[in-house]
Amino acid sequence: MAVEYREWREGDDLALLEIWGGPETHQAHQFRGALAPSSDGAVSPWRRCIVAEDVVDGVGIPVAAGVVYEASLHPERLWTYIEVARDHRRSGIGATLLTMLRREAGQSPSGVSRLRAKVEPGTPGAAFAEHFGLSPIQRSRLVVVEPGALRLPVFPANDGDSGPTNDENAGSDVVMDLATGSVELTDVVGRYYTAIHGWDSPGVLSMGQVQKLFLDDLTGAHGAIVLRARPESAFGSGVAPSKKGRIRAFAVSYAAPATGPGQDEGQDSQEATDVFVGHEPSLDADDAAGAVRDMLALIAYQHPVMLELDDSMTALRAAVEPLLERGKARLSGPETLVVSD
Image (cartoon, rainbow, N blue to C red; front, side, top):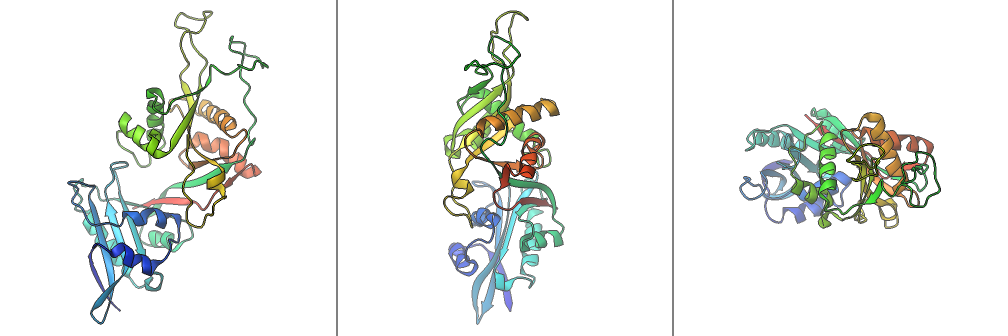
């Protein structure tokens, strides 16, 4: 077998699709779109994309490709992805592509050369990453929480009474709908995202970036609910509250995601509402866990919700992992590992 390597060219996507067939994993489905012509970073992000051709009788047939590229979000590492046709694996093509991509990474404009990738445990991609020194730095799971999995919190009456109440308006001063364009919501979402990604810093996020990434209409965001601290008075205790309490936890809901590989209409992603749940990062561990648990109880009271659970989301794990153990929540699809050198 004679293999030659070259830059990505127009039409390679269709040629490779014929050889590869459908994506084997969610990661393949996600990252095939990153295979594109190389760029020096002047107009689009810096990217290097290399194709491996099996040359037969002087004719090259694309059988594998690899890409490495910069990202404005999480700029401390470069994303990389390699895919080799099933019948050409274990022949050194993937290893050669990785070596070439590492060489290209050493010349990135930003000076960043560390690589990161996403793999599914137990797959050839995970074995390849481990063999070449890419180790897990984060685990992510999609979890569906069943309706009524958590007991609803009991809120005090709005007059400040700390005891249980049957007042239908109880809690209306601490549980509120909030516009996704709210500056207050944007601020806490951005700080929370930064706080849970200390393992792979997103860099400095502007309010506009946070809106674009999590709260813009184009993200599918169509509603938000917040759990606040008790309202405070600007004039001291014993005086009627004059300002809202600060946000303790939030939940942003999104339109149903498109059906992924191996997932049919009517499965979890179609039935459950996709939500992003977080909390004010300055809360102590117990307060954060309690706020997130109360928020999850509220949003999953009547309908299932699906959320992404990273190991770095300590407060959310405290609420969700016991539900997984008791069968009140379930995984939706396999785990994803972020690996890096």
